Length: 138
Image (cartoon, rainbow, N blue to C red; front, side, top):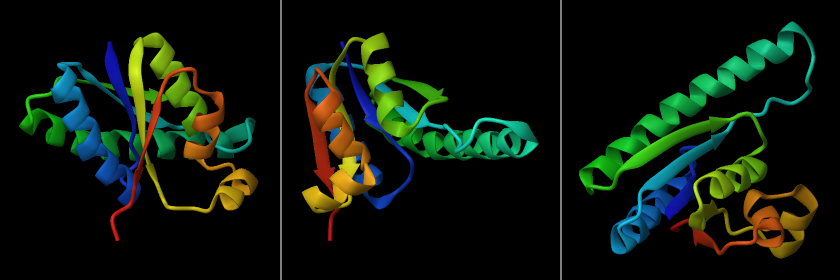
């Protein structure tokens, strides 16, 4: 089993990283670090450039997360998945037989999450495994 974390260097995901490392260490599970890199649109040269920029941003963001996990002695796997964040996390969770998906939350109201399609909101409705939403520290 594994712990899957959605990580993008946002304030919420930074706090979620620390919680995910604690959960991984407590269960003795490896941590799968996921970055959803789907670019809007799907055609043309502009899409390719935007997609490559997202992949590069994901690699940079995940490098920091790997360092934090390494310091705690938690083994990691890194995945940059060409899907929107919620779908990327669901794909990784299924592939790695995840015990839990950990995500940061911006503290949005349930209505705002439903209207804007926040990643935690989507996961809470679509995931068949537990989702741990970590609030951003104030």
